Image 1 (cartoon, rainbow, N blue to C red):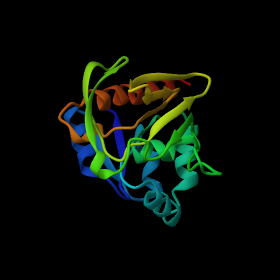
Image 2: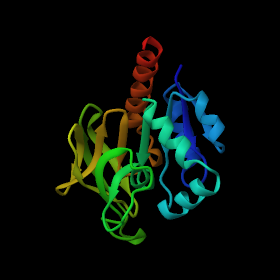
Image 3: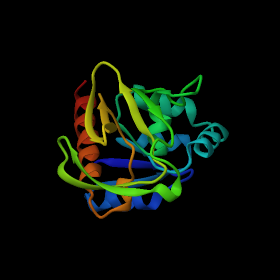
Image 4: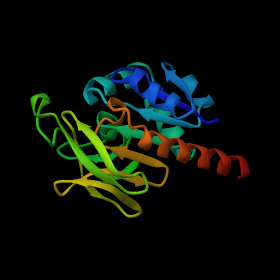
Length: 197
């Protein structure tokens, strides 16, 4: 069974835990960097990216998170988590973790009151997926080797770069757990591959 962590500093943590458990995997709320060692994959949840970054710095998570990604274990960033994962954030001099080969723009779809739902086709996940967008970012561009998984109104809203997965929306806020299942599959593949290397 894959053991999937959810970074538990801020944001929709318990909803991700529920989604992981609905898929039969073990969920761990990660409050300390030492917990990363026991995980097969990690979810960076939605929330407020600036606040999350401040807490990541305060609790000494920045380098351990980068090392986790560089070890080949998958990371899934949703909404604010996508911003943290991105290699570049439009309008900012430096990225946060800088792990995923994408450029992200914050608050692309407007403010909280402009939150909406949309039906998406997500490659390798679902022909129809009801996605919840709340102050969502979008992926402006993808680098070499990054695969676009979903678009909405001509904007990229989900992508995969090697063992990094990112989406603009909040999959944990619905009862459709297929994208979490897809990520757990990535973690299981990576676990098997790392065990054999």
